[in-house]
Image (cartoon, rainbow, N blue to C red; front, side, top):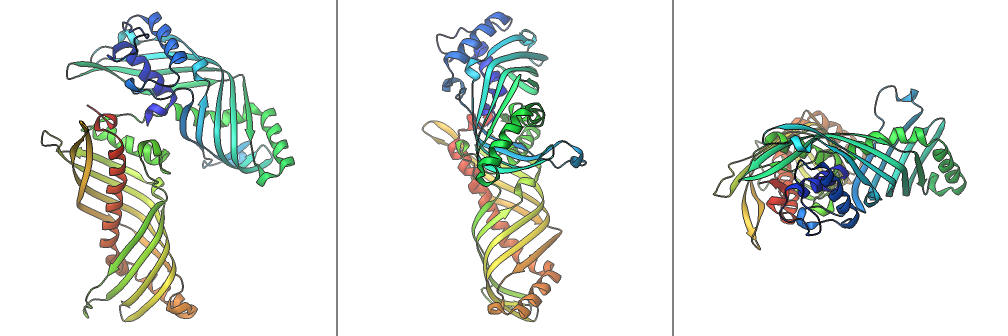
Length: 463
């Protein structure tokens, strides 16, 4: 996903101008010490190959697709700030990059094997436009603002300065440059904003707010700038399959930024997760058991995964046998499962029956899972494929349960049973736990394999 981001596209193209064997014939390869050649050839490529260069792994540059830019005001003391917004831009087309100029390229000539160098470049352009969808809610100065719809933001006379670290490496006798830690500054002479359908389509209020936003563009730009820079500087990078730190960091970035899914990579929605069904069934009634249930959940939406933390993602046992293991640990502060249920059976000494809507909310969810897979070939290319769960564990600190329409809608019995379930949640969780672990483990395999089937091993990992 990093190649869809502005600075990573630039870095990738510049590196290939130096070392790639597949550069188009009209682009001159440059010596790493020839800064002037760098600037000339990169600007040529930026102008003449805005549709991208697939052979170099460079996607379309103009328009450049950006999945999401998010601004969230959750800091303390926000009531004292002149602008407080929760704003999300999605499905963005960034245009204007092909009209930009690259200059002041420095630091590339000092990159050698196992040696880090501070590198920099400057980008200037007449206008960058971001067009897509938006949602907004908050306050601008003393005025409330809310809405959702189409949007366009134009940055005039932009100046971007980029500083980053480059390190030379070798793999199988070939030289590579790894780009990390980009630091970006962004300036513009004017920000023009157009937000359609503000205030539920009220044309008068919408027009006045757009005028107000453009009259106060400097304040708006200062609010937007950190999120834009974070998007451009995102360091979702390819990792070596044995680099646990890199894999863990990459997984966390994906979880944070692409939890709604990312179709180009085949990534399904992670928040919410759609669950068709979970079945908890006791085939034989054991009189010694305190709980005997036939419980069926269906059409579940699971919320909260995007707030999770990836503790570690480790891939091991990758060898000539082409077998591997994935060890994953994730902590989620709160998971909410909303959908339909049906139940009949016995909890302790009490019978229970009902069907309807349900809500299960688990707190402090800690998941550890080990998956087995292998490397398969298709049309001469290698793909990863997960086969099974070899082990899984899930701990929670509490679960809250609400089952509607118990006992055919008898409110007194229903409220009493829900209270009883919540007081004895640990006993219930022991029954639910195996089915939940199996279901979500299989969902995880499906999500991962959908990505693996869409992308070759070389596209996902450094080799």
